[in-house]
Image 1 (cartoon, rainbow, N blue to C red):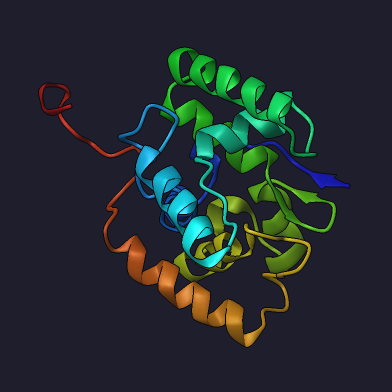
Image 2 (image 1 turned 90 degrees about the vertical axis):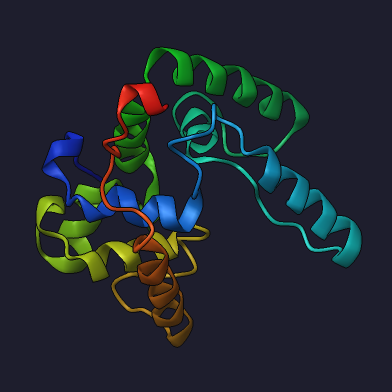
Amino acid sequence: MKHHWVPLEEMSPYMPLAVISSEDGHFETHNGFDFDQIQKAIKEKEERGRVRGASTISQQTAKNVFLWPQASWVRKGLEAYFTVLIEFIWGKERIMEVYLNSIEMGDGIYGAEAVAQQHFNTKALNLSKQQCALIAATLPNPLKFSSKNPSKYMIKRQGQILREMRNYKEFPSKIPEESK
């Protein structure tokens, strides 16, 4: 297992933008749950029988840090409880830091620093925008998809994430407090 914890400040500023673009476009504005995405996932299952996730970065962090991987109603209930707690206690920056250090990003590779070293022979701080987007493209299934040896599908997904990243200038966004 490869894992090297680094603070958010020691990661490329593109890493949080890439995962927000790929995994949770409303991360900075929701309270841990994206009810629009949950509704869309339910509708998609009803109409097409397709099951897709609607978990936010906060929910995934709660699951990865406090719970077990096998899906169950009990785990989902506990995940909701821990999501509310971390949103209230940690805040967005800490949630992102924990997420980017705990998420599996390859077979036995956990966190941005480990994947940067293993797949790109660099530090997480030095990852390019393109590398961050490629890493984010693996996150639905990092055991199937690889940022080290990307398939044509991965290159296409990387392009989609790079286009989406244009919507986000920086993380955390510098929204004045009175505007929040």
